[in-house]
Amino acid sequence: MTALPPSAQRPCLRAAALHPWGLADPLLKAQATLALDLSWPVGAGENLSAPRQGPGRAAKPVLVPHTQLKAKSMATAEGRAMLVHSIAHIELNAIDLALDVVWRFAGMPEAFYPISGS
Image (tube, rainbow, N blue to C red):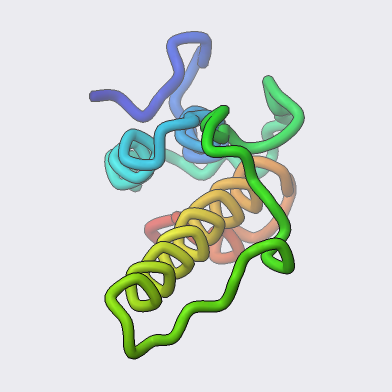
């Protein structure tokens, strides 16, 4: 699997970050993020634009505000499952935020980029 979108003319981490950022499937997004080649130059001076409005998200299930969900006791299997599910969402958002920072902010020192090898 390549982390570089086919449309990229030359490999740089910032351009490559757009590919996993746009993926809707969480497993594919994580795999593509881990597959980024950290030996590529960051491309801090490249001006990039996202091919979409926001990060890739699955069409279903429909996202609802947390205030519409019933709280479950952590003493139940269902409550613990909801906690693990919430943590998974937090981690997915962390991946999207890291990728977003990488592609969106040009001109920063290379150490600024959270996926750079420096």
